[in-house]
Image (cartoon, rainbow, N blue to C red; front, side, top):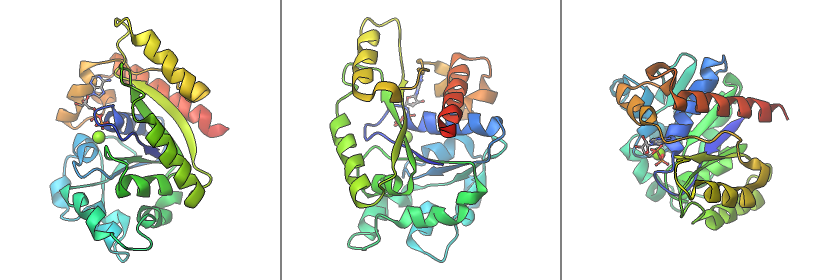
Length: 254
Ligand code: ADP
Ligand code: MG
């Protein structure tokens, strides 16, 4: 299963979700690869200690068919979780692939040879609907959409759903929504319940039963290059992301 974690809004918890869901599945014994496609490299920096030992990154592999993904993949601080790292060079991808007829298929081609090696591949995407995200939607079998629990939570959802529909039509008919995850949830807020209902109305049973609360531990753990499971194993964030991983395993069976 190749899962793109996507939402063109920034700051909704894509990276936090990609890192900690991937980590939870790795801790439960799955072989997991996290592919960082964001030029900010946040997911790489969150759980990889020795990024400096590589001078290349995903950009180079996407631009040079001769380079293997393994050459930019490092072990993370989570046993069983590898990370294909991204750097600022990724910001050049859009311009570099301009006019290339296979521009949308580069990531799919790059992942094809490693598919069998992993039980789950997660793709962390940047906060745009540009070419990098399109590559991710074309490469993915499933989507995980984090939505921040806030008044403006559904703003932009139409554009995202339209893009998903377009990708299905043109390049990836089997693309499915694995689930919608409500993040940064604050049940003390009066609007929290209302937000939840509005998200349910659009996405129905795709919404994960588990919601991710606001939690300082989730914010802190990347500074120590750890997932929340070793940084704060008993925290609410750790428990909730573990539950999301269990829901994913359940959905993956069907
Ligand atoms: P995105 O990748 O969508 O831009 P991030 O995962 O980087 O979003 O999250 C944006 C910011 O919010 C980061 O500083 C992150 O540490 C913080 N954050 C994400 N999820 C939570 C949470 N559940 N509780 C507290 N802070 C969070
Ligand atoms: Mg991010």
